[in-house]
Amino acid sequence: MTMTQTELRAAPADGVDIWNRDDMEPRVREILDRTVRDRATGPYSAKTDAEIVAMLQRFYAAQGLSEIAISDVQRMAGGASKEQFAYLLRHSGDAAGERLVLRMDPLEAIAQTCRGREAQLHDALGSVLPVAPVRGLDVNGVVLGQPAIILGFVDGVTEPTDSKGHGVSGMGSNYGDWADKLAPQFIGALATIHGFDRSNSDLSYFAEPTPGTRQAAIWQVNAWSKLWWDGLIQPVPVITYAERWLRENAPVCENPVICHCDLRIGNFMFEEPSGKFTAVLDWELAHIGDFHEDLAWACQRLFGMLDENGEFLVSGLISRPEFLRRYEEASGNRVDPDRLRYYEVLNAYKCAVMDLGQAIRAATESNNHQDLVLTWLASAGAVFLAQMVQLIREA
Amino acid sequence: MLPNIDVRIANMIKAIEQVVLPALPKSERLARDQAMLVAGHLRMITGQWKNALRFEQVTLDALIGLADKLSGIVAEPFAGELAKAAECARAADRGNIDGLEAAYTALGHVIDNAILGGPDHVPLPQAAVDALFDYGSRNAQLERTWFKAIGFDPDRAELPEIADVL
Image (cartoon, rainbow over all chains, first blue to last red; front, side):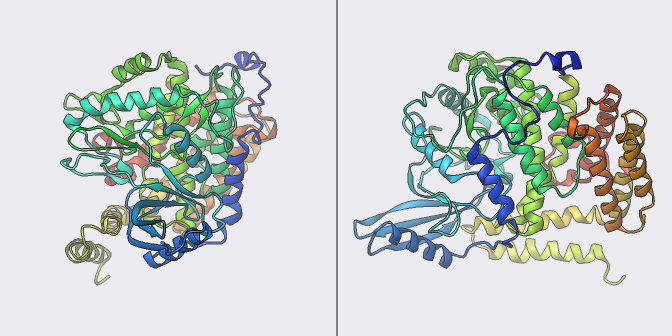
């Protein structure tokens, strides 16, 4: 698929300047600019339970609640991005209380995203998918001191309790016999998200790429390359070339849809023993774009595993050909192998930027609540470099 | 050196795994995860620290090799800039890890500029792309080998030992 110079000159007359680095969603730019602006205000320390209680008391008081009681605060594990606490909220209007989850931005994380966007998607998709309800929001951290979303607590597990162990951020989990129950829901969730009619939803934190142009792809390249260059620790020639390739080979997206962009192993919860999905998690990377981006993300080697016959299982659930076939069946979308390959390169690029760029920058500045996890994940960066070389060579 | 570094690292791993971790309640998953990561990092460092200087030398040499190849392929002013930057990198103090890293970074910036073709995004000749891929494959293999103990790499079983790639 690599374009020759002749083909480059014949690129679509869609008004998209592939080298205009400023062309990206306004809210994404705000978040990335804020990252650079606030970087020097670190280091960041993991919050104590007492600090969390004080922050939440302040938040609920500002909401007009009285007789506020925050109890049973429990730090939640997992995730390489957000600092999360479960707690029980009681107040004069709810003596029994509600179990909630505070999900907030540390000063810097492996990805820099917007809680407002996340909240809007929870609200929008809640009618068609199991997602945690939004119970509170401080988009810019005006009251809490740092951006945060508060979600209803959802019961369930991200891996079977009888599995043989878990990896960081859910990677390396083994679904085993559970796959028959989980795979149809996984595919169905993707089809539902991509088919969602957003015309009546408040998605004001999002912008829509122009259909029939390369803007959907270029917006992603611009956002991720900005994150890379703004946080650069050490140059990586393959990452730089991948950026160039992604610009010069950006495909047209005819019909932009909501893309979750991190729906994979570890990012859905289910109940045992039924296997029924209770929540689709981690919407922070979601945007309006090309559905191939989601499929390519799910197909990444690092998020899957080999079965006993040596066949690769997408997200540890289902073979790649079967995954794509059943997705087409469920969604009515036709998978274009060239576009899928493009987004596999883009996703490897995104992962390399996170691992070898932002994760190391955040850990170097000591701006995360678990710097150690970031340097651990960063050690996987070369896996994505190898994938980029292989994928572009084969394209 | 007494006690030597390997013994001290082994002592730290033992303390974490046999004293700290058992003392942490099961409910403190984040603390337990972090303690296990500390042990994991230390175990990985055990296999790396003796080769750290050699690793930086090899990675810088590979980048210099890429700059040399690119300088014979790309147009001016990039060719001249690459040749000059490669010479500077060759002059780095090969006994100093910080110096090698600084030389790598300085040369890397010049290579980045050549790859992007400067502000006008001059087309990159196919031979330059081929050279980049050759370098990229070898470099990725080296780094994957360096970090294979982390266990993330889906193809780690096919990777050689660190000593075999340095």
